[in-house]
Image (cartoon, helix red, strand yellow):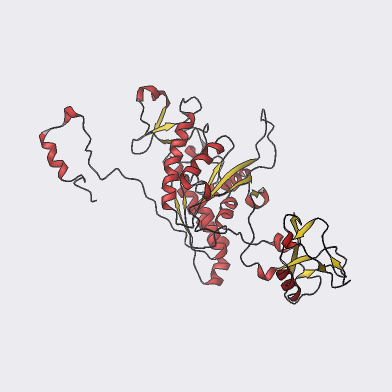
Length: 407
C-alpha cells in the first residue's frame, strides 16, 4: 500500500482531532473512524510508515524461523520501506529486491516516464533459511540435450574457466589434457574453477565435454538434469509472461465476478511464483492486505495443481466501496465482501477445472473458509481523568476483564 493512493486504515495517531479533522473520512461497520492518507496530508510519509511498521513487527513475530515475507511496493517508497525492513528483520536477512514486469505496454498518459515494473522486497526471518530454489520449468529443461549419448541422460554444460586471473588464484592454474588431441591446455590469463584433484575426479566421472571431436579450446562441465532435483536458482527479474500483469489480472477478475468491481488486483500467477519458492506444500500463508482475495485464490489453485495442503489467512479492513463504484452498484458494501465472493467463485471454478485430476487422485480440494471479525477488547477501560476517579472504581480493579467476557 503506497502513499498517494488514498488507502484507509484505523486512525490511531497521537494528534488532536482538530488538526486533522478535515482528513477524517469514513467509518467502518463498527463505527470506528478511518483515516485517509492523501498527499495533502502533512504527515504523508510518516502515516504510511507507521501503518507499515506495526504490521511488519507482527509479521516477523508470526513467521517461522525459515519463513519469508514479500512486500510489493512501487518506486516512490521502496527506499523508505527498505530501511524499515532492515530495522525489523535485520540487514543480514535481506534476500532480494525483485523486479516484477507488471505491464509491457507504455502509457501515453504519463507526463514523464511510463512505469512498467514494480518492486517486491523479499526478506527471510533468520538464517535458518539457507537456500531458496524455484521449480524447474519446460523452458529451463529444453536447454538439456545428450550429444554424446551419455547413459546418465540429458545434460547441459557450464564453463570451466574461472573469472579470476591466474595471479589471483595460482592454486587453480595447471595444465589440462585434451583427450582427443592429447595436447596440454592452459588458459593464457584465467585460472580454472576447480582444483586439480576435482579436475581429476571430473575426468574419471566423464564430466568434461570438449566437443564432439575435441574441437573446443577449453572443456565444459556437464550438469545432468537427473541431478537437478532441488530446482533452479531464482532470478530477481520476473517477466510478465510467467508472472502475469495487472491488466490480465483485472480481466481475469472481471470475468470471474461478472464485472469490473476491483481496481488493480494482483495476478494469481505472481502470488503462485512466490509460493513456489518454498519447498513445503503445507505452508500457512498470511496476506495483511488481501484486497480482492488474490492470495487465497492462488493458494487454492496451486493446491489443486500440485496436491498441496497450503492454508491461507487473508486480512482486510472493511473499507467501504465508493457509492459511485460498480462494486457498490453490484451490491458489495465493502472490499471484504468482494474478497469473500471472489473466494467462493474461485474455489468452485478450480474444482470444476480440475475435476478429472482430483478424481484420479481420489482426493478432494479444500475450498472452504471461515470469516472472522475483530471484536472489541475484552478488557475494561481503566484509564480515567483524575477528576473522574471515584472510590467505587476500586472494585473494578479486582479484575480488568469485562463481566460478559473471558480472559
